[in-house]
Length: 120
Image (cartoon, rainbow, N blue to C red; front, side, top):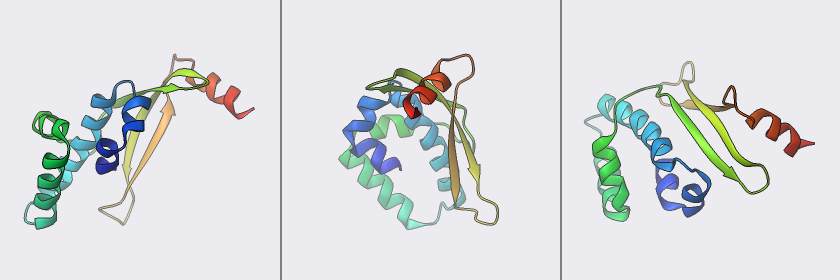
């Protein structure tokens, strides 16, 4: 997911607060990195990302460590306009390396109504 967030320009266009969104995923990644500090794959991945994506280094250095960061994602939908979602990231029971990310419409926003209109 981290590679996609940096490599795919459509994510940058879609997510108004792209840096906040990415920082949440980097906080989760940092938690895994600390857990598997001896795993060479992480060092190779970090080197690859730093070389390929200039924004990665800055955001990596600024990111926090969290297994469940509080992130609000602001999407700019072509038909519905501005929509706000809250990220809930859950660890799947029994699988320490598997996570489930759930995006729910932010309370006190018009996002839920917009989603219902898009589906009808």
